Image 1 (cartoon, rainbow, N blue to C red):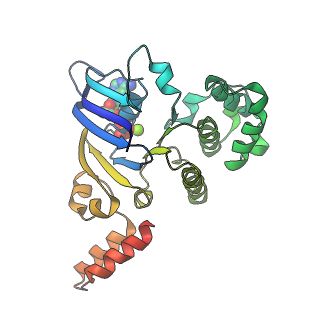
Image 2 (cartoon, protein in one colour; image 1 turned 90 degrees about the vertical axis):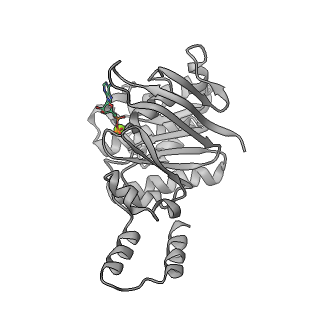
Length: 271
Ligand SMILES: Nc1ncnc2c1ncn2[C@@H]1O[C@H](COP(=O)(O)OP(=O)(O)O)[C@@H](O)[C@H]1O
Ligand SMILES: [Mg+2]
């Protein structure tokens, strides 16, 4: 299986005195859907910015699709990576929604005569067709996130990083975007997704759950294994999915939850 991402012994801090990551190691394979969890300030966005070379590491190495990230190949490597930042206000360049998505396509070297169809297709996928000629600054937070998602997906990245990219959407909007990304994955099983989220239920759908706590990876496992350790989640000040709360609550009341049935319930939910 080929690797989408390899992080080796990475040290990074915004200041000399304080390191966010002291010795970070992580491998993500092509086609994996990884959910990255962690309390505010645990280093999730910092890690996303390391992967696209916005944060230059102080020690260690970062490989994206086998290529080591260096100053020279930064732009080459970024062509394969789509990132949706946490704050959609900081990522608009175009004066209209249409221009903004076009700008991303231009950077990805998509021919001009193909752009219009692609823009229309992805705007429609995120439910923003009617807003193509609007100024991004006049949109709501959730609408901005939808545009940012359309822009990132339209360039067909091999690695998609979503940094709390649906945080401003209502539950229906969140579900729509999740279904959209899942549909894209079905179309292209080699698409790798790193989803940074506080939506603990989303973690159940992932291939792998990674928990960051103060710059350390304290959990790196399948969802069903990860949530077998609610104490790790609690220590990292994270919630656990509803189904696991249900189990804890029933146990606390002395109701024996047949463990086999429970595993089956989880397996069913993780489908
Ligand atoms: N640009 C920056 N300059 C200095 N410190 C920063 C900067 N961005 C984040 N930090 C600090 O780095 C730590 C990790 O932040 P961040 O990666 O944004 O966490 P998360 O995304 O998990 O909430 C926090 O202590 C935060 O205050
Ligand atoms: Mg963040």
